[in-house]
Length: 229
Image 1: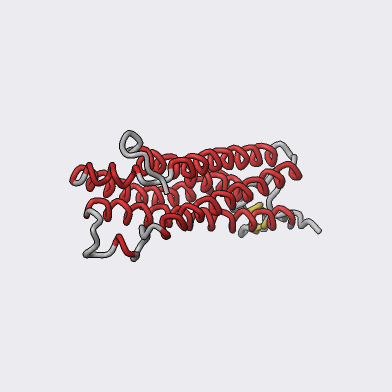
Image 2: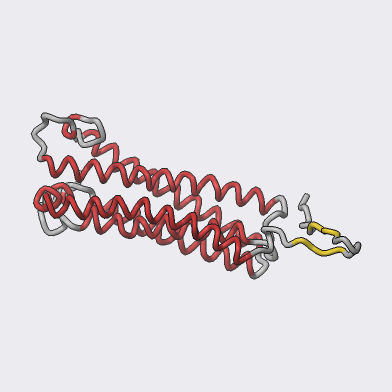
């Protein structure tokens, strides 16, 4: 059964009652707090992109060769998948704000399915790279292997960043399932949807990070060897 939101009431010294503004109604405060959290995410991934750019200047040919070996087809498909997931998440938020709770839930489930598809595709890609000996702590990335040092740096950054991004995808799926639970409990409604808004913002950051990961890792070697595991 849905639980109606009941505002908290405070009484002042004169006995007058006042409604206390909770986080459900503090729309701008809720957005500001979450933007500050998202800023830390940008700083974290930004540092990794800066490391990639720096080492690329030191080992440009190694980075081109390593990038050319990535599977750009699977990477491109995953880019499209995440772009569509951002669309469905945004449409769901619009439906919730318009009062279409059922439509909003459908869009959330669609986003979850697309996020799961992203992980499955990435899993196939990683498995192929593992079978080629290119994986963290695997043959070709260990000291003493024949792989160029610059390529080891590239793949180390690639697996670290895509792995961290994949972890954010998993977290996103988890909080979307939690959002559905909150909607079913009547705690997220068209009138009180700040939680939905913040989760949609989180998902926007997740898909935007990948929009930068794809060209930085997959496309810099597109004019080189036609690789792809």
